[in-house]
Image: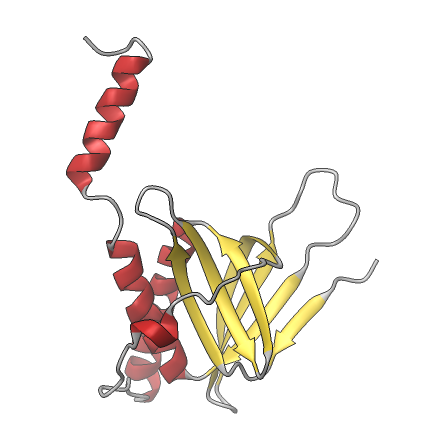
Length: 169
């Protein structure tokens, strides 16, 4: 069976964020092309990896080709927030980032997490975005990820969990 690929070329909007309270958040990547929206369910680690990949790619483009980052971009919470209701197309398994120098576009490819015994090839999306769109996505997603539970709360929750399981004093 042929693999199903969804392509937004170009995206009119792209973001990565979360819905819910720290400790109970659900993370998404969401892109729009005109009136069409695709939302992908992902893990916090996927968003962190995407941030790192975008930042590394932009730094590499600057270093190798002199393509500078935008210095005047503003991150608007209302625009960048995940739009509800969210109906994810799939859960992300793997992602990749590329750059189309001829069109000056960044390509985000996300593939569906493979389910054991699945009878279909994993779905795939391809989002083509400007460098500015990806730079804003990275800045916004960094802020969202940083809004998680404070480290001391995570440690206290881990200690309480250990005691409940009979591993504490």
